Length: 336
Length: 303
Ligand SMILES: Nc1ncnc2c1ncn2[C@@H]1O[C@H](COP(=O)(O)OP(=O)(O)OP(=O)(O)O)[C@@H](O)[C@H]1O
Ligand SMILES: [Mg+2]
Image (cartoon, rainbow over the protein chains, first blue to last red):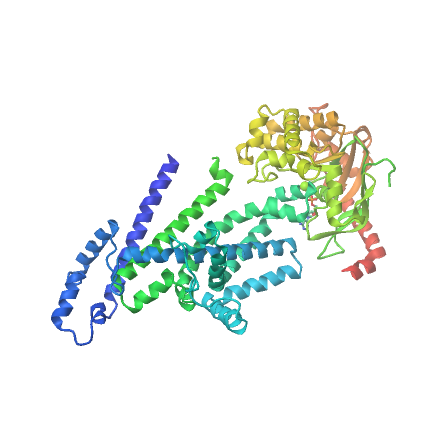
């Protein structure tokens, strides 16, 4: 009964959230100055041509009318036609989504590995120079925004020592035998590790740039959570059982400490995905974020709306997944 | 050092790191022979848990043992490296903690928490460890051991969890069990059962038991010998008969008068008189001054 109510509440709040996002996106873009139709036509176009094109895109109707027409279509899976690319918005957006998902996922893995690793070291060697070093690293990683990390990485490993690729998602000369846009995933499944390496060489720097601030957040949260956990009676008892400190931390403290860290990491992950907009641009990575900037420059309203809505859906999905993981990892919730 | 003692704490002093002249344990001597049941009695803050933590090498970081020796089964613990010391202690001794609600890991199943020392340290196979866990759970009178092994701590009552912790403590057949007020966190109705169970398990396994408690009544019931602690100092070390018949220290005598006697239910209880406490404090202050005058220089040098 409680679980059912929880799910219902969840569905309703999700729907309200998405509707709110839709309203805001729609309103803000209409209110902002600049005429997309004028930008589509050559300078000498006649008023008649402009009016015809307006009618074609439904821009001659009232804003409220436009909104409900658009919303009705969206609910039927029709996000309209992009003004700048002149293709179905849903198709364009879904085509770009895998690139951004793969980049964000790689960044998340890097951030978790670094974050958990640093928190572990600071706990294992607490009250030594190692703990202080971790605090300093966290401070630096947090105070520098992701795009500056991106620039620093480009200058270091793209220009000074050109180890990694600085632009694009994959070398254009490569022949890709793929059926989906999940290149990284497909290259792994098809054992085309040559392509995997090429992809990673492109993705590693933007992923690290995105990951560093999140890594610092995870490391800080987990470190303080671990500090508390290490004083719990069950950790003391584990010590009396003769296990070395490393195992006590890994087996008895870590899982308990990760639970509260995880919910906050979910929130931070949405910031990371927000960060892809600038980072993808910086690295000319063909994902959603890069597409979003193009769409804004071209004042491509249908495309912007599609992208923003998709981001909103992503954020909602992340929160759902985090809640689910929390329940799965917490026996008190799993077995009531 | 006592020749036949299994646990021998000699002249142990523990100080605060922040104020090394401040002693929490004051030249404590305590020994437990193989198979002996010894009570460790004292009011709250007397340092009973500090002694337990010293034995298991889990002292809080704020304090430090500056003097004395801890010998367990003939091994001088302080001479070992920290990981070796931990293994040595775990092989010889086990702890039954005070609060069963916080002493079990909430995200791990009971099975692992009983068997982990068997599989990880003693090299039991998973199956053998599980069988041993089932036997132990039966020994502590748990009716459905299979279900309990699969459970998480929050699915068990406080009394059940304490039984699980007792089973876990006996799992590796330690020679010494330290029980730190194992019943104070429990319902009054369960306290007696758990107390009886610990005594029963001790007798069955022949383990030495250091039983930490506030309650002289409990000491009278299950212990052979007793150490009384006041302000981190041992004020009495005797056998239980001697304790009640002719206590050596005025504080102990006062403590006996403050304890309900099962053999004299109508006796009126007297609180420990203020002047006895004052006198004992003065005694400690004098010992401290002496100790400091001998070691003041070295203590300062070490900090
Ligand atoms: N982490 C710590 N840092 C500093 N002092 C401490 C710490 N833990 C305990 N103490 C002090 O050490 C002394 C002995 O404490 P201990 O816990 O051994 O008392 P106890 O006899 O077990 O009392 P109780 O019956 O309440 O459990 C107390 O004065 C206490 O304030
Ligand atoms: Mg205590």
